[in-house]
Length: 587
Image 1: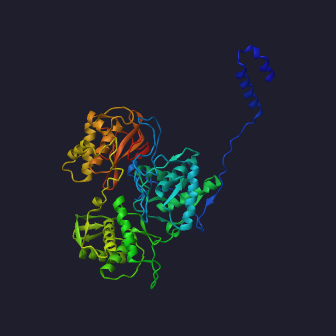
Image 2: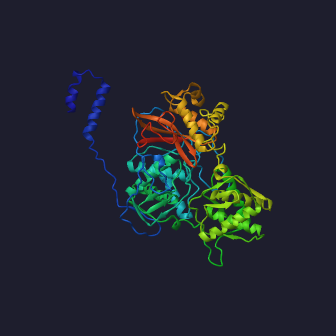
Image 3: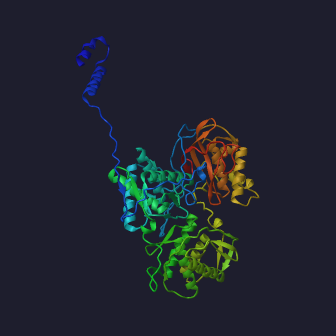
């Protein structure tokens, strides 16, 4: 064959280098044998915990279907639901870059917490490979099994990744591993769960189910911006901590064996973790704290609430993680002991979380006799019911659980500093007390959404005049933008909020800049959502706003008269691809 080719050298006007290349390719084709692709042998491997557990061979998946992904909530009845997705062309730049907000200062208190707000310096422009994530998973697994609790964070490269963020990385990485995908994964802003709960039996989840669970968790995080309280499985409600531990073990196993396990065993988190709720043996105290220690922790909680506009998950006292219901019990007991001039140490006791906190009270002051009476009634309630109250009645009205903790933290910390109880305590509704500060990235003015502009502030004030509730204000701003800005097609940011307002014409990006600017100027949190969406004339990249009202994020797409606040009708919300949620758009 080679001689035949050589004989035809003069018959073809082919340059010598090209012909040599052709000859080499033919030789390679003749000499190298066919290579057959082999598939990984999926052995019947199983991940087990330190103790043996029973198997559950009848595993099934409970999924609550939803037409609108934004309405699905983990931590409420039903499971985290899948969001179908399709990829297509984009009207806006298909980028997933993180926000460019300035970084927050790290807290130096003893409170463990996750940095949930967008703009965290740990998030900006950080991408990780599956290998780095699986290596980190092995370290988290080891930490949990050694310390019997979650770490505050795991370091990947030089980045400190919080546990909610790590859950997002692990579920995304696991899905990629299962599909054989190796693209890098971006670190996202992920908030902490609001009220972690768990109710599972010991057993095993199959690979099919833990992959399905990962997909639903991923969808929930993308839609809600925070980690779920729990996710429903065939074994019951798997709490946030157990989800972290489970996926750390799954990916840690994969990192070692290069194959996903066929099952993963599960047991309740309380049987894995070091108990933080201690019931002392009669006549003894396994764990107790001085009033000075509780006073210092009260200052930590006070500072955390005032910085982060929410309660921490727990506070550390003398190396022990104390839940907020437990801490309320310690606060009330210490307050009553201070009032009664008793200085003995206080035992840590079990305390369940309230079932449904609520409030209905006006702002005002509660004098010393009033807050001592409140503490006395809270203590009696917790002694009788074994959990924190949803609220406590006062002369101002019903004061909710979170406000009680914040109020008593301030009182006990005041005593720790001044060695005397305050004459009164000022109390505001929790919603008012936790109105985000200007450090909140969802309230910050940006170049394209200058909520501090006098023009924007004046317009926001005019639009919301006479409106008293956040919902009424947000709706009025949405309606104004929707009805006064004409849609104009172009790519990405060109005009910003002020340009859109001046020209009264804008694309979805600049329309959303105006909506976000006006909403933030009214003191209401707002952020951007970016995705591929199916419109009547095809698939396009699209941007709209999310507005935080009454403890929930509502979608606000102001480019169509068919839409209303919280309701989208101009594109198909049943099938779309989310590309990111941002405090500030990167394009």
